Each structure stands twice: as C-alpha cells, then as structure tokens.
Image 1 (cartoon, rainbow, N blue to C red):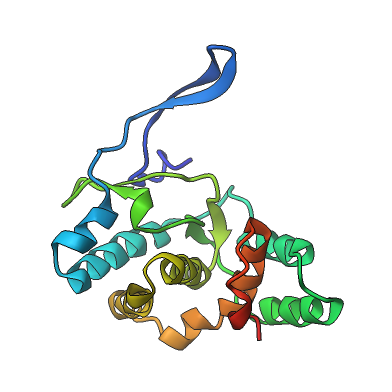
Image 2 (image 1 turned 180 degrees about the vertical axis):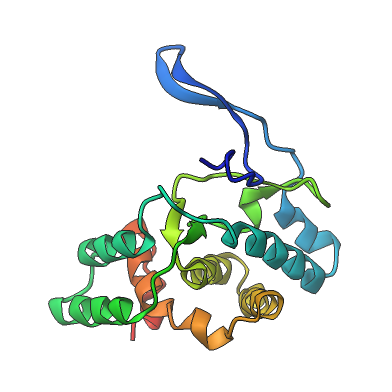
Length: 194
C-alpha cells in the first residue's frame, strides 16, 4: 500500500520464512539517521525539513489502513492507571475531535527518518493508520517531548507553519494521545491527561 502511494518507505521484496522465522525482506535504510542532524546543524531548519516531509505524507489518502480513532479508543480502554471516570472523560474528548482519512505514520520521529536531502526514507510503519494528521503530529510531539523536550514545541510550530494548521488544533489531541501512550508502559504522560 505504501509503495502504491509513492511514500518514502522501504520497498518490500518478499515476505516469508527465513532461517525458521517469519520476516519481511526489504530495502535497507540509509545509515544516516535524521536525528543525527539535530546535533550538527541548526535545529529549526531540521524541524522545518521534518515538518515538510510529514506534510507530504499526510497528503496521501489512508484508505485501507486501520482507523486511528479506533486504535486510540481501544488503547484508552486498556490503559493501566486510569479510573473509569478518567477513561470516560478521555473517550469523550477523543469523540469530540475530528476524524480524518489521511495516512498517519503512528511513530514518526527523527530516529525513524533516514537519509538526507531529497533521499529521505521513513521506516517503522507498523503503526500506520488512517486518520487526522493533527493527531499524528501530536503523537510526534509526545515522542519528541520524551526524548528532546527542548525541540517538541518547535516541531509543532514548524508543522503548523508549513501546513497552515493551528498549534491549538494539534495540542487538542494531547490528552487522548497521552492516555493511549500509557499502554506502551510510559508513565510520564500523566500530566497531559487532565
């Protein structure tokens, strides 16, 4: 599906059993990781490059991919440490947000982007889904905040700038995205659940 949409993803050559284990044989990603560029160049320029790459991905239709809203809802129901009232409130917040029909990566961050210039390749498509790009950007914000807190808001602002989105529209997704992240064993998202 990703190849059909001409997304910058590794090309799949075969799916099968290799040395007694199931696997996927695909293109090898360039060794140069985008995250390394944050150290060697101006961070703002890299954030804008990343936002442009993500904007191009979010222009593609997500038909045939699992629903982002359904995934978030299921994860809110399974999240440990939430009482029934919190789950209900977070589900109501999620239900009030606009669904979408675009490709969402689900795990977009600088360590999943390899290459440079026009030769970028995005890897780790296991969480790809169909939904609202602003939810996908909010997930990236949460991931950034965990690894590079000083760059998290800069990324949101860069994406808003290149797409004409509102920062507030992106951050409106924060409570349900943070609650869904609790299913990944990350407990430091609790401050965003209110």
